[in-house]
Image 1 (cartoon, rainbow, N blue to C red):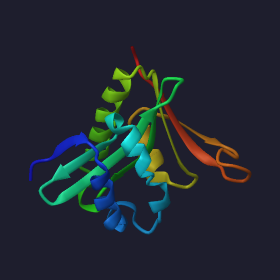
Image 2: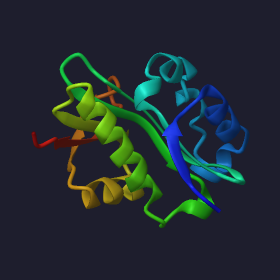
Image 3: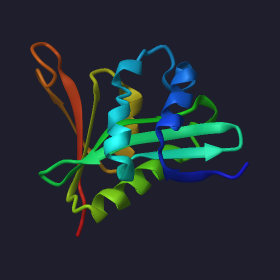
Image 4: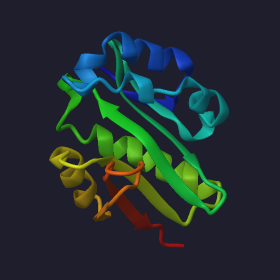
Length: 148
C-alpha cells in the first residue's frame, strides 16, 4: 500500500478521532485535537495516508519566537516501528524551517517513556519542567535546535 505524506486536512483528524484508540491506546487525548490548529496552521500539519486510511498525523505550528512546536504526533497501531513518526517529523521540520524556525519543541506527560525514547532517538534534549501546565502539572519538554 503506497504511503503519502501530505498536508493534513480536518477530515484526516476527524477520521483518526473516529478510531482514537488505534492511535492513542487507552489514553483519551481527544480534547487535545484542536481542529482550528489544522485550519489556521495547515501548512505545518501533516497526515500519512494509505489506501486503508490515515496511518499517522502531526499537528504543529511555528511560534513568533521561531520555534516549530509539535502539538500532537501519532501513528496508528499497525504503523508503529516503521519510521513513520520520524517521517512526519521530517516533513514538519522542513515546513517549519521554511517559515523561519530555528528550533523544535514538543511536550508530553511525565511518565510517557515511549515519547521520551522517540524524541531522544531524534536528538532532542529532554527535561522535566515543574508546573509547566499549572500548579502540580509537570511536563516533559523536548527541544532541539535546527542547524542553519
